[in-house]
Length: 278
Length: 316
Image (cartoon, rainbow over all chains, first blue to last red; front, side, top):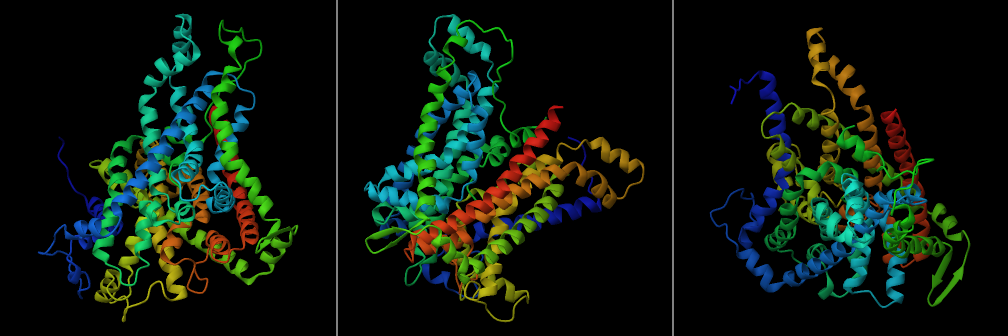
């Protein structure tokens, strides 16, 4: 370890970084702080930044009195479903693109890029009309199809990058050894592409988990609310119990935070591929 | 090429080379490629292309009660004649311009600060990214509490340091509500730009700065003559992507204001949503959507053009 000497420039730099970090993270601190307070203390003025009364009561109450468990389950089902569908379709497509000469491939990839940029509010109208006429409003299927549709272009895009790093000689060796194309794909290439598949799957899961407007439109039955809609819906109540609401927010945000921990390495390529719907 | 500029450009696909000897066993099964792509292609047609066509079709129709009639471009005429649309366009454009400008300015500043940090950079990067990781709907819910008029901590902190002399209804007054929405979007959007620009900064060779330092260039001159020219492409691409993302942004507004008060935060996606799902005028909403799409597509074409030109220059 070399000796660290601090110049005035270093001190200024760190002061600025820490100030920016404070602004960035303060809302999260306040979310956690509020979620740990007992009900009356939430409405105390001036507000308390630390409290001797911190407890997990609000978490217990929000689970007991609100269908948060149900919301989480709905989000989980929909997100896992969308992830599975999207990863299967995109892995097949990315393999097709990187292993074969496909007429119109460049045009298709360009089309993928444009679909990532479509305003989702525009698509929601016809999508809602179609789902309503098929009787699929308030079903998991409607949300799974919607989430896969906007995760798919991104997944194909990222997987093309991953599959490209696996030499085509490996496919050819497998085929010369007597494997069929599908066997080669499932038994040779997919295992090699596993890190890429995992990254794409996690990102798809996060996209689905974080999504809001589609579920807002496509669910009317409170039993079918996903967690983002369920929580935002609590705000509309007559008197908002902020400590419970913040506890629910912590629970909803936590899975995503943990998943991002695993994804740090892929952030830049994913962010440019449009991993997150703004 | 670097990771970033690589992923900013389009993925390389197999090219058929003229006169290339066919490899045994591969050329004969060329049509297999289509089989692998077919499921994704059919799926995207069903869930994106069909709704898109239907949206355009809906924009030419009007439904009143149980009757749906074809009205041609009448919905567009109505939209373009309405004060609400022009207000919304104004709000959308100023929201996008303000947010993107601040994302880029703050993002660039942070990226430059972090680029010089040797220790704990990975940890800092993740910490700065948290606003962007959490669901916009959840982040906005937290901000609703921070900005709450009576018990919100923002009012408390701002009046404690003397920024305001009385508690404000941040989301209740038009100009304050617009500013608040911009602030929340800046909080959420800076990390995206910061991450891209940080990756860009890392492509600049340190030797350039060392040489400039030896020649006696001031930090400001180094920024002007080394950082900015090297980073130009990254800044332009990040801004374009950010414009496309910000102009479509709806979640924050949906949760925090719904477009109010009196249209102050009614960006185009919010106007579209309110027209469709509050007023039940699907035809006019679809027309607004098509106009929004045209706006987004203009920037998308710009983005694709930029990355393609860059990729070609890079491969030369």
